[in-house]
Structure formats: structure tokens, C-alpha cells
Image 1 (tube, one colour):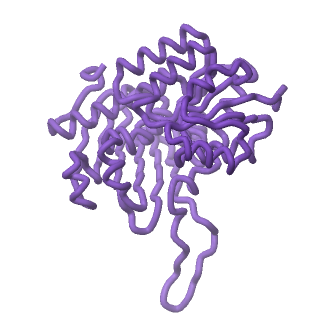
Image 2 (cartoon, one colour):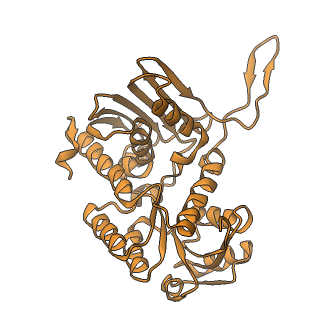
Image 3 (cartoon, one colour):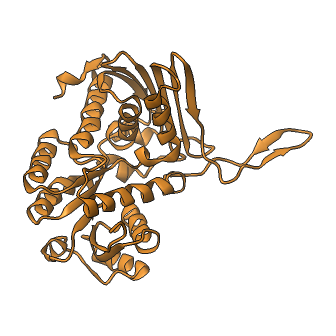
Length: 339
């Protein structure tokens, strides 16, 4: 039962879609990826050829029409997520959807309601919850190893900014990048964020500012239980992908540092040094992407609840909108102001 074959369809053959296709095809027992679609038909065809997927095409509705497909992966652009979720729910398909569900809360609510009505599974792709390092921090908090948490500090910096075309349609730094950190903060602390204060600027690329966004930010969080949080983001860290977390509590602290391609430390007369950290999210979080898909398949097979539900996937969008409002109005914003 644990590895019974589950037929799946993939919607979106871009970078993250191809990563999931590779994992489903080669690294996850029992996953049977039988169809891929993308509005760019050539991209769907290339993905199918690369990973031995039997069928491809431009229209995702063909996946929903197939009765043998139990679950779908939504890896298309954010603005298409909620319509696909609603269509998939109506077709009785279980759904894995990349973050964010949508930038609009009313559309998220309609999609989550459709999922609830249909009785299907929706898992949102906040893969960092499944990272072994962050799982260890959560374990330390739940078990009381560090006492009562007082502070959480998250550092998340990319090795290089994305293309300006991407920035313009990304929804902004807080919705595109910091949203992972908002979700991680709540996951680790196990409580809701009550208030956000965000400050930031353009320190990396003036074109990002011209596109109406920022590339460097610090966000202060206040949780309902009194815990205080700090998130630091930047679109460029010249030394690689910078992903660090520390939680400090009444009985101690726990911290995880960057992942490296090796553990070698070179000691010579002039210096002691090591190689740079893993360079981007595809390398740093590769195992977490595997674990989250295994969890999705387990939910389908066992009928167990999603480990990252639609309701949970909605919350970081609320926090992101509060952070944007805070940045624009230069004041703390309560999440109750957003909804």
C-alpha cells in the first residue's frame, strides 16, 4: 500500500515543474507521471521527452479529463493557480500547488472552498518545512529543548537578482521571496504572526526600484504568544545562497547555518577557508522537494490530511500583504487590517 502506483499529471513545465518531473520520474517509487501540459507546447514536449512522460500538450484540461489520473501538480504561473485548483477540485483530482496559491485573498478563499466542497487534498508547496535542518529546529521547540522561544531570526538571501521581466510579474519581494520566510517563521514557532513592520530599499539593482519593487528588506514580526522575529532578505549575496535560522529561548538556542558542497576546511599559512555555500535553491533544498512530494503521495494513498493545507497556504499571503502595506506606509501593520 505504501508505494502503490499513483498516476499524476503535471501542469507547467518551467524550472520548478521540470524539477518535480525529474523527481517523480527517477527518485520517488510509485509515482507514475503520465502527462505534462504547458501553454508553451514545446516546453511540455521537451519535458515529456526528457523524463519519459507518455503524453504532453498545451491544455491542462486534458489532464483533468483523464479518469486514471488521481493527482495533479500545479507549477504554472501564479495567476493561473486558483482557476486550475477550482477546475481540478471539480474533477475530483488531488492537488499539489506551488506557492503562493494566489496574490488575491478572495481568489484563494474560493479555491480553498472548492477543495473543501469536493473533498480532495490540497497541499501547498512550502518545501522548506520539509528541510531536515528546519525540521530539527521545530523538533527542539516542540520538545522544549530550548525552553520557551523568545526570538526567531531568519536570513534569506539569493545569489543574484532575477531578470527584471520576472520582477515585474512576481508580485514583489514579499510575495515572491519573503513568503517562504513568513511561512517558516510561523511553522517553527507554532503560533500566528500578529503584527508586521517592514523596511527596505533598492541596494542591488536600480531597475528593480524602477519596476516598483525593492531588493533588500528587514521585517520585524510580533507573534500572538509574544515571540519576536526578524527576517533579513536581499536579492544578491555575492558568496552564494544564504539560508540561516536561529531560534533563541529561555533554555538555550538552536541555529542552522548554510549548506556546503563539502565539509572540507583548508588551513594554510595565509588563511583558513572553505568552499562557498550551495549556490541556489535547486541545490540547497533538493531533498526537501523530494520529501514534500512523498508526503503528497502518502496523503493520496492513505487519505490523510495535507501537511500544508490551503488554509495554511493562505496565511503567508496575508503576512506578505501586511509587509507591503507596512513598507509603503512606513508603520507597523496588524494582520487584522488585511483580513
